[in-house]
Image (cartoon, rainbow, N blue to C red; front, side, top):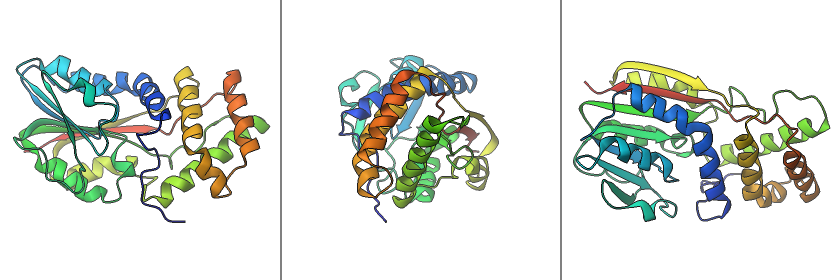
Length: 263
């Protein structure tokens, strides 16, 4: 099974639900880093693979009318309406297209490069886009570090959830995802020539947003799970009913945040 198409298509209605849940889970982490790293008025920022609107909007608040936020994605369905003022929205493939012109004080990507087949080239182009002293903040998942939907596998409902999560990982890997990518970020930033590299990780569990994200993701990929023999329709319906009870302590893969500055 090999398919290099993006697994979680932005065109599907579940994408908006996923973006809101991801924002609830990870925006506080992202903006804690943004504020600690000193992203302030007048800066130029490139938000790579923006997906939803929450991060570009938050960056625009911080850079103000004198600054600029360029939000790019291969599909801008969920960001085109926020264009204007400090925000510019562009359709863009980070691994194939030249960086947007002008140079940037900040380049940020969240949960993007794990899905990009040529992630090394994408990273090279992001570093290339930095001005001297510019900051790169990469945040990406590492499903290999914590592969379970329910780390407390206490019964048949949790075992089913974990089996479906294993199916999800198989579909991701077949499309070129690196399930151990997050842990490599500090080393990759140093190898790219960045300085003052640091990193941390965040691992949500038993949040209501985890349940929303789980249900939307399973609905989005259910046809593939069934087509590849990874689950039956009955099992998926049973799992979605289990999620709806609120009694599963659902988790996501850890998100590792790493940052460094161009000399």
